[in-house]
Length: 204
Ligand SMILES: [Fe+2]
Ligand SMILES: [Fe+2]
Image 1 (tube, rainbow, N blue to C red):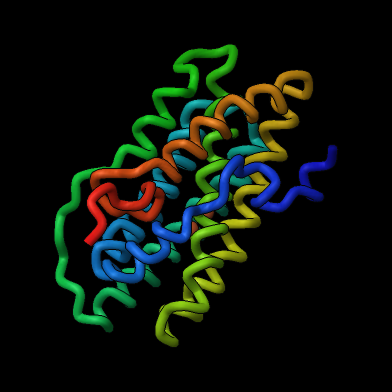
Image 2 (cartoon, rainbow, N blue to C red):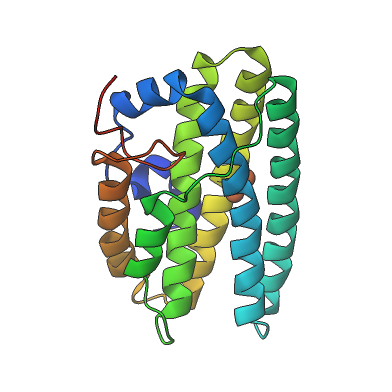
C-alpha cells in the first residue's frame, strides 16, 4: 500500500464525533489557546526526533522544514488570538498527547517507529478537525483553518512515509494498535475541551 494514496480518514479509526464540533464552536477562545500550544508542540516534537535520530539525514531535513512550518502556524494562530481579543491563559494539557505517548514504546527497537506513527496520527486528526471546523467558523479563522487542513494532511503523509521506511514489515500492524488507542482518546467523553480531546463529559 502506497502511503501517498492514504487519506487521513483511512488511518483514523473513528471520525470526530459531532458533539466535539459543537463543544469546539461553543468554546472558540479555549480551542484557539490550545491550538497555539499544539503548533508549538508540533515543532518541538519534530526537533526532539531530529535530536534522537541525527544519523537519519533525510528525516532531519524533512523535520527541519516541518518544524519551521509549525512555528509559522503558531505565529498565525497568535495573530488570530490577538485579532479576536482572546487573552492569554495558561492551560493544563489534555489527556490526548500524554496518553498517546504512553502507548508508544520508549526505547528502540520500536521507539522510532512509534514516534513516527503517533506523529502521523496526531497530524491526521488535526487535518480532519481543521477541515471540519473551517466551514463553520467566521471568515478570518475559516481561511486559516482551511489552509492548515492542507498543511497537516501533508505532514501526516510525511510521517507515515518515514514510518513505512523505518519498519517495512511492522508499520501496518503497529499503526493499527496505535490508531485504535488514538480513536478512543479523540472520541470518548473528556473532562476538558482541547483541540484533540473527546467531547465534553458534562454537556452544557
Ligand atoms: Fe501545524
Ligand atoms: Fe503539522
